[in-house]
Image (cartoon, rainbow, N blue to C red; front, side):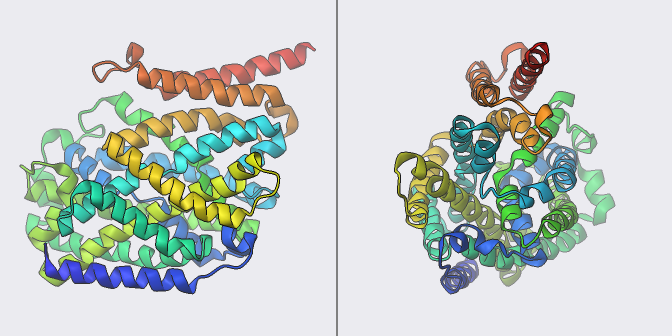
Length: 452
């Protein structure tokens, strides 16, 4: 364990606790959505920081597959975010909904809302990110993975609980600064050590210089469909619902895209530099931590480590609170007539945290969690949720919407479970047949509607 990293992490933890405690919220709307008064700067900071928690996975992907990281993990999400900004951001803020299940219920009825709430909860439980947080604690502090995942999740619950969404936003602002600072520190030093961009490029294996990283077209193309998750992404909607005005929601998403492009440049080329400087790294998940140790002096490496923690924790607490809010606002009221949503949301933090820990320790693969959960939820919610903002004649009818959500989720799950030897049935990724089923149900609904 590096003492300078340990001291830096203690300072960072104290700062999070202080900010979380200072961000106390009063009242249901303050706790759930910061009073719906989020202005552009905190909107951008919280959205950018939340949407980039998979930093160790990005480091692994860049190390293994080179420049294709940008084409698979970057460009699809920029395009999807732009679609969200121009097509959905203003409409989401202009609605009376406080959550995605609210929107589904208002458009398609309570059954669709209930099924949607379960899917949002599945997507929001941050198993991949608490696993990454546990791995970072193991890397830098030597903690066993099980206890690291539990400790990291418990600490996150503590500093979020008092202020709710207001605590999430306030701590995201600090984490936004730290995540960019970390890579701005490490990338120039790593490039210098590797002989600049040309030296890095020359040192890469041939496959890492190709657009698909040697994986094949479908392996890259599937991320363009998984990135459509952005159009049903509950953290996007949550921030739009919390925005001060519809204009803030659209403008905030557009500005965020620019910051994601910059951050992907920093992280992709840092991963390439790691491959150039450490070509025989046994575990590519460690690409960023090991690069920091290799090229940075102790104090700079400590700051870099804090930046990695900030990148992951910004997403852990955002999704953890989203899952808790789904329990408090969307699930609990279905179970009892009179519910204190704030109290249930606080209880939901513990329930969602426990679920995230259990799932993380059971699966132990960040990319697998992203892929499988993203395939199920995106395919099930994409058409019904996007069309809920369209004209009535373009939407599903009520019973058909609930059927589309449920059946599509079952098809995607079954396709994933049918995987054998790492191969899906017919060699087709699960999101494709699932989306085809959803589109087929929509088409059948409209054909029958016209026939009548």
